[in-house]
Length: 390
Image (cartoon, rainbow, N blue to C red; front, side):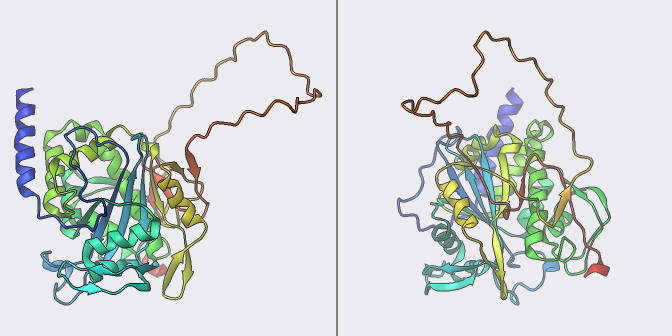
């Protein structure tokens, strides 16, 4: 007990000192109140952005001066008010959306645009502009945000001791230098990053099937973090916490150890099958994709109403079911209790004066089949793509 408390105190102090300066978001009701270290009250929306910026990154990723800054990964985490379910929504990088007027971190103002790819928002106005764009697009308030670069992804995958992934067919991608044979792999560091970046080696080679592959990785990561092997290992818990704060650019509302811990506690007891990873439904258009209506609106109406979402579509073309997934035993059938109630006459006329009883609303919205994704409890394998198919 003494050693555990000591490590916790040292980790909290050191993690707090490693946090970077926060990024100011344009939140109408002011900065979110920082809770104590208990599960945060109510629902939570956090936007997580993956930047392709090479600034401060290893030279292996290219010249930092020759490339722009795009949010090629944009994901929204929604935790329900009762902390019983969570959703992670991925926005394709090539989705055309309206971008509102934004003020960048340099103070420059960027005019509103009616149709631009969502991954350009980080270029136009920084993380705050990406948040504002997603808020206008979805109708949700997003008080928390984080931006992660390549090194952050590498650090977090290493902190948990690697992430197990299944590859159904060989992945061969010259562009990202990713070559993985079919089978089971535990990836960390650079290998984990390249697995997430690969596009040509997965599915049909598009960003849409790359998102499927990323959801496979994130599902496995959630299982890894929630496992006893990780949560009971203080070294891994501490390393993960430090990796988050020292390798991410956090909004001012999130740039606090207590806040990060309180959000983590809200996720702690959610069942794996209640953690849903979904990709926004889209239709193809010249040079990219557009939100597919009404399925797109229905998804965010459900989240706005704090309803759990349920998938009815496939996992997408980038993944397939894992044939070696753990099998859950079916509950044993039990005999129905005997009853003395009189049998119901099927020809009896219903009394029109008695109003029918409405079935209770279970607070779950089943999404359109056009929405691809999986839960953290689903075991899937990457649908690899070899060079001969490219």
